[in-house]
Picture: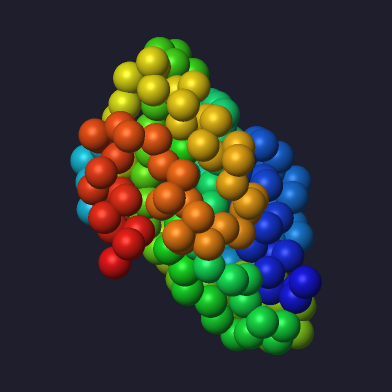
Length: 176
């Protein structure tokens, strides 16, 4: 597995498991984050500077609100030595306070430092963040747990999706 792919995996594992210390294996100390949010269902600051800031926004604060987080990168990991990588992503999670389900998708655009393979910039675009009832949590978690994690082929993800009307726009987005 390439160093750049491992950097992405460390980010996913840090965010999903609320382990900010893993970000030192994902981002350079002076890395930057850009958030492009096309939905009112979730909010993030548009710009974040430094690995510590990224850890605060994408791991610590995120982990205060959400649990049962599974994030997937669709498609193959980047090749060794890749300077950049773009892919669609999907996340499933529950809100700690209410148990409600959230399913979202969008795109990652990574730029890596050549020497270390660590990310020096990440742009996250959030296209959809759909709210579902707590009753939808079990079938969605069963679906997500059955997928290859964190790299998943889009067809496998789409084919196994439970029939929940709120996630239809997400499935259409992933097909495009």
